[in-house]
Amino acid sequence: METWLMQAQSLCIVLLMVIGIANRKKRQRHVKIMSVAMIWDVILILQIELSRSAIIKASKALSNTMALNIHVTIAVLTVVLYGFMIQSGRKLLAGKIEIKPRHRNLGWTTFAMRILTFITSFWAVIPKDG
Image 1 (tube, rainbow, N blue to C red):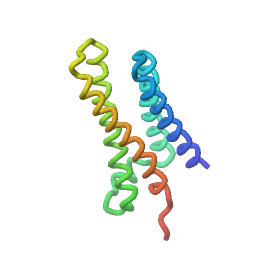
Image 2 (tube, rainbow, N blue to C red):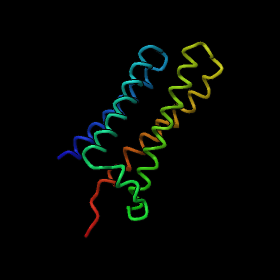
Image 3 (cartoon, rainbow, N blue to C red):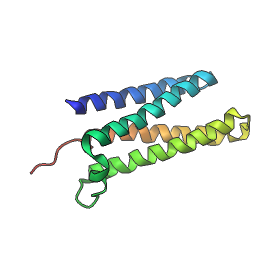
Image 4 (cartoon, one colour):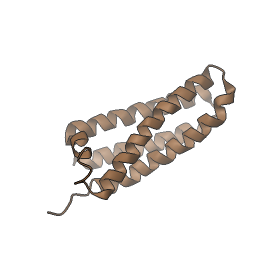
């Protein structure tokens, strides 16, 4: 029951990011939407940790399925990229326009990683036989 709720939240986060990207020319709206998406994503990670002890499971990489290990790696990379997005976004808001190409490239990379996180989450939640 809880799995579908988390998957639905994950889909909503991806869709919110799509809306944020579509609003990238409207700076204030873009910043608000993307901030909500990133905060919601971190909250979702906390929900998963509290309900599934995800950190303990993820730390057992040798006994986990390949799908779970790939999912965890991509998810962690996504959160790390959020940090870089926030950093470059704040510089852009401060008027350092030369950072724009880096922010754009980081943004597309972060979005791709978030989509991969969503896709791999379906394989990661499939219970192992046995």
